[in-house]
Length: 302
Image 1: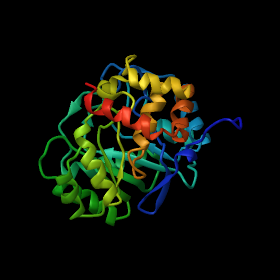
Image 2: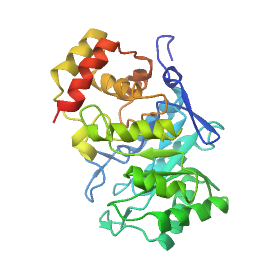
Image 3: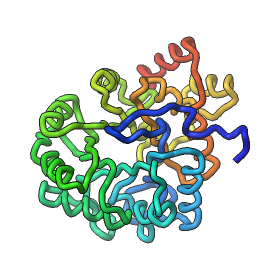
């Protein structure tokens, strides 16, 4: 590592309960395959490449890894790659996973887990990661139905010592309040980024006011989601990137981190060069003028 390399520490830190993490983490959705994620016929990524990216992330100071049991391709599982690459785990490494969505072994989606099935998903993550407890478990949901029963099932596993901290994903402010009435919530994970879901701005602020981490996903890919980043970027983003001599992706991550000290970033990639670039976004400071210009993009980019 050269002296010029910017590490994850440049972004500053946040506490998830009693766990301190650098605000730039690493999302593993892209690791098990090349191309689009979460599809049955995904093309498996080279195993050695995936392992090298994970190890490089830790070398760069990343100590928050985001994963899920349903992140897999025909030959690769994100959790098992994490285990192979990083175990025995560094003492400061925080692994956050998510439960709720389910896929059968062939990769096809199944109905959302019931409260009873959530324990099995937690145990699956424990087995794959080689852990006896999980640092953070996010309940990911679809829809606006009550989450109290499902979140309560995870709270019981927290009381039993299988889970240290709880979060929620793909949720509304009402869901946050409902979950907090059951057990403490350390983070909210929702799709959000520059020009993506500006209606989430108020929720981001609500989380900050309550000391809850907001952890956006698809920060770089935006509306492309699990398909990954597209080549097109707003002229204002390109102009900011040129002004700083960096990639548009780095501008997007930096903008996200500027939304508040409680906002974390978990960009994912299967490429070590992209990883270095993503982590370096934590050291990029945008001016008030640049933020004003990007704010207009945020509210008008389709």
